[in-house]
Image (cartoon, rainbow, N blue to C red; front, side):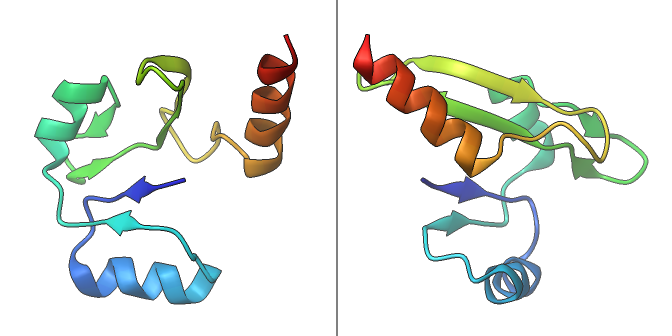
Length: 90
């Protein structure tokens, strides 16, 4: 699992500490570039990126994607693990 953020170093580190994140987190990413590369929505006035989550298959292809346009609509780790387990059993 990895995460990426348009937040600066301090805000990203604060989030890592607050939630006890133990996987790699990228930060200082360009809102516009990430939106163009992934299709994630962004707020022009606020300058922030809305959440987007992806499950990548072993071949490096997007197997599942979730795009949010507001404060709800995110992949949950438990759901991802269940989905991955189901796909691996097929």
